[in-house]
Amino acid sequence: MNKIPMTIKGEKKLRKKLEILKNIKRPQIILLISEARKFGDLKENAEYHAAKEEQLICEKKIIEIENKLINAQIIDIYKIKNKNKIIFGSKVKIKNLKNKNIFKYRIVGDDEANIKKKLISINSPLSRKLIGKKINNIISVKTIYGNIKYKILKIN
Image (cartoon, rainbow, N blue to C red; front, side, top):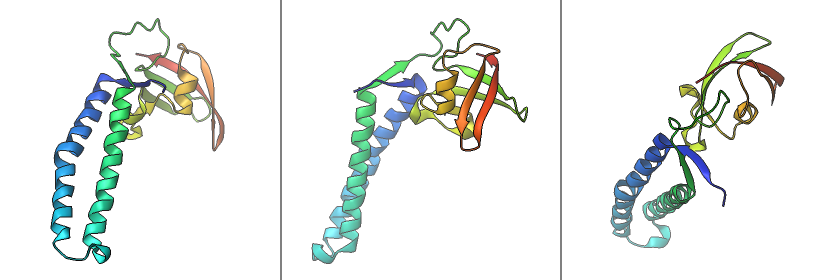
């Protein structure tokens, strides 16, 4: 399986989510199942079936997170020497050449991505175009609105 790049912060966030699922959510669901069994016939027991469905979803999330952590490539973005090129963890400032809007983003792992916080996934079309580029390079990103050209203004 391919390694999954993530920052130290992203790994901590996933571990916390896993801890909550295993130590809080899972015991709550077990309690719900136990309580639902008291209502009688399991074939027609809606509470029991709902709790079992919730248990299945929880267990799938636990397995998914554990697999991500097993295959994680933890990258300390503060120890990387980038030689003025955009790499994983870089903060970039870009300008849309058509409407002149300016955007600032940090390139992070899939689980860390949050457009409201200006965090974009390493696997997003924009990130894939930005990786390896330098200040003043122009990139073209295919979107539903057509190709949009951006100029790279700053790299941190």
